[in-house]
Each structure stands twice: as C-alpha cells, then as structure tokens.
Image 1: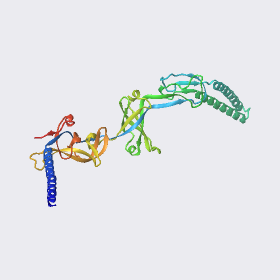
Image 2 (image 1 turned 90 degrees about the horizontal axis):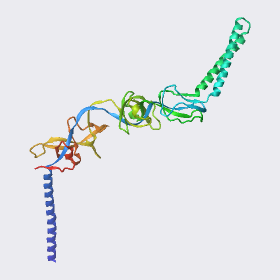
Image 3 (image 1 turned 90 degrees about the vertical axis):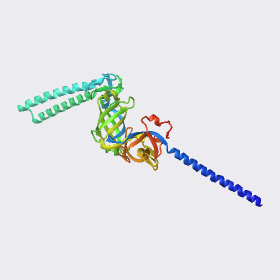
Image 4 (image 1 turned 30 degrees about the horizontal axis):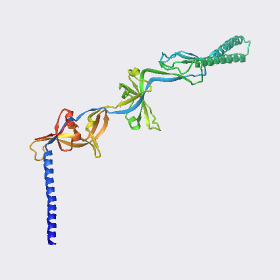
Length: 375
C-alpha cells in the first residue's frame, strides 16, 4: 500500500514538473520572438498632409434636354393634305410643316368676305343718306352693327384657316413624321418632335438639404456615360417647390455650346454642382483612411526614441480622425491631423500602432515583399 502511494507521488511530481518546465520554456521562446520582432521594419510610402483649397460639390443624376423642345400636335381635325418636311430636317421658325385640308373653310371665308363687302357698301350708303337727313339714325346704327359682325366673321374664319396650317414654333431639328398624307387626324394628334439642339440643358434633382446649398449661377459639370466627355454649365433655375412624393427639388442648368453636337435629348448624365471653394482644408486620398467599428483612422509616421533605444526610430502610430465631405478620390479631414503630418498611403494593411517602418518611394515595395529584418 505504501509502495503504491510512493509511486503515485513520484508520478504526480513528474507531471507537475513537466508542466512547469513546459510553461517556462514557452515563456522563454515567446520572449525571444518578441525581442526579435523589435527589429522588424515594414516598408511604407507616405504622403504629407497639406492645408489647401477645397472645392466641395454635390453629385446627382441628370437628364439631358434640348434648349427648346416640343412634341408638335395638330390644333384642328381634318385630312392631311401635305407634309412639307422630312426626318431630321433643319427647320426655321414659322416654317410651314403640315397642311390640313381647308377647302371648306376657304369657301366659308370667301362668303364671309362678300358679306363684309356688302355690309361696308350698305354702311357707306346709310352714312350718305344720314348726312342729307333722308334716313333715320337707327338705320345707320343697324348698318354699322352689320359691318362689325361681318368683320368679326372674317377674322374668325381666318383664325380657323391658321389652325389648318401647322408652323414651326422655333428653329430646330424635326424628327420622324408620325402622320401620313390622306390620314384623318383629330385635334391634339402629335405629328413630330422638334428639338433645338444648338445648346443643351440638364435637369436633375437634389434633396432638401442639398438644394439649400445651391444658388442660381453656380457652375456645374456634366459627364456622359458613353464617351466620358464632360461639359461645363451654369444653374439657370431652381424649382421653388419641393415634390411632396419624392421630397426632391428639381434643378436646371444650361450647358456650354459644345454639348449641342455631343448630347442627345433624354440622355443620362452624371452631374456635379460645384460649391464655393473653402480655404485651409486638409484633405487626403480616401485610400489612406481605414474604417472600423471604432471609427476612421490613419497611420501617421513620427520619429520617436523608444525606451531603452540608443537612436530615434521611425514609428507608425494609429490616429483616429473625423472625416467630412468627399470629392473625387479625396476626403476632407476635420479633426485628428495637422498640416505637415506624414500619413501612410501604402502598406498600412500590414501595420499596427507602434510598428517600426521604413519609408520607401515605390509603392510596389510595400506589397507582397516581406518585411526587412534589421541586424
């Protein structure tokens, strides 16, 4: 019994001693590894934070429209007698485009003119008789009323004839005819579209908050998706009413003359409203900012002398920042940095705060290249 107890005590002592020895060995190896890591340097490239002019803007989606554009429609019903244009013709203001059959109206006009002529003769005769005191005043009044009525009838029929002639309201390019000769058309039938493409405009929508920042006369930049061509313009109108359904405000801008040949009405455009420039703003490329659950941060390179070191070392420190507006590939830094700070812009994915870094000029050196181990 005593022998078994002694054997158990010996085995327990060996197990405890092994565990203690393993832990001491592990601690020693970890310490050696950490000591060696102090000499590891990570290659990074840096950019200097500078205070400069910041041009904020508002991005939106817009639609290109002609400076003037309309779907032309018939004002009166009837049979189409002539179509005096072809697809894509350039027409001028007041040019005759379509003629509706007007033979009945012309006949009525001739009859009205004859009645007017008779009324004028009767009025002149009544005036002569009145001057000689032969006729009564009521006869002259009746003749005058007949003459005025006849003039009104002539004017009415002339106006009806004008509705049978469809004229171009402005200069522009006319589209494909949507009616045919001999076709009966009702009032309001669209027969073609007319677009003045000498200069284009863009309509886009902004939120209530964005619309409060823009003013008439602000410059805009519009970019088409197909060719990537940009056009400059100026805001010419802001709708004073907010759409109750979308909560958006419609804004219109007139683009430069080069847009007339390059854009098509209805085309999709990306629009940027250029807001007034702001001085003394620190901005950085968006790629240098790391976003996490704790906030936005960047790595700043500083010269420090760690405790126990003989000489200064280049250390990367994580600094939390507050970002503001974005423009292109740049982001505005509101808090956390000052002008002159050196910010890591390549190689930050392999950094931790306090890491020793080596500044290089070629971003390729910060990629898959292993860290350089110091002596």
